[in-house]
Image (cartoon, rainbow over all chains, first blue to last red; front, side, top):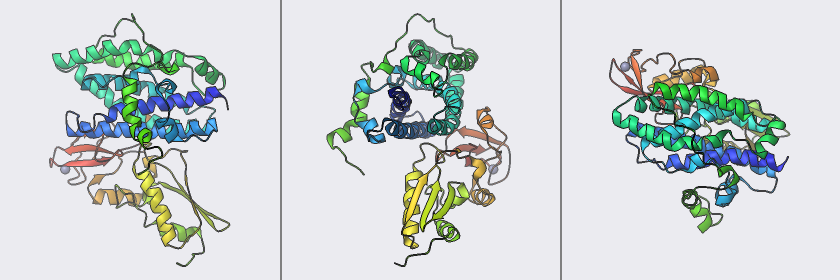
Length: 250
Length: 165
Ligand SMILES: [Zn+2]
């Protein structure tokens, strides 16, 4: 096992945990009951995925850190999630457009990871891909419904897309960890992933009457631990109990 | 407490008492969550698999397995969680499908596969009350992660559908 292997699995866990934490903020606040339940269930799937990935990462690292230590006892700079995951939820359109972009990404990523040379990661991926497909179906339905809905819902989704697009480059920009894992047969090629993602996303956005923004700015750095100003607050809420009462259980 | 001599059939019989906390008419064997029971040198190994990654019932089920077997006199029990192969609704037993229908939950319509999950919306789901297939999806998620919420256009009743995965 290498540091790169640990980091690769850890970052997958970070994406799942941080996005799951954001979605869980809708619990009790969604526009109607069915959506409240759907949002909370999606959050649960993501947090469950994070737990499996963190447990695996902890074993790869071999220093006795378990899922809780990795989720609750690391600082902001040690988290390697995409910036997109940590952005505040905004309105419901923003949350669902972001969710759609990431659900499609995860569906193709985890489909590819079922063939990883890391057997444990492949097993986690085989579960995750089914759920990601289900999530993408729901968020994709909503993008269509809201994009092709009223002038107001279309405008809000377009505004969300304009704000989010510059964060998508990070999803496909390999760093040394990705390259090492691709070489080792653990991780898939991000260029192939991008082709698959674009095929789905561009078609759906067109169908929904949404315009793909120009690639005139890109924000990245999350994977190297350089986060937006929103990350600290998210972690403060997520980690508060374990920080204030170390080792507490219920 | 007497100590039971471990045999696979006895362990399986005892585990009939372990129900899904969210759908208590179903045993963990009905659901296909119970993957394997084996006895090695008097030690009982029980292998379970999660339905959904985030299924909040898994922890309770693991605890129930331990408690049930302890009460039945099995002193040496190891509960293992196995991820691969990934759980699918194809593992629901015929008895499970019948029991679901009896309590008004529509069982999964079709054989599952990743391909099926990727399809937009699958075959029509029949209403568990009036059997009409004139039904519509209300939400991809129902009362638990493993169910979707449907409504029957014939009898107008809402119902849970145990979705394919
Ligand atoms: Zn009906």
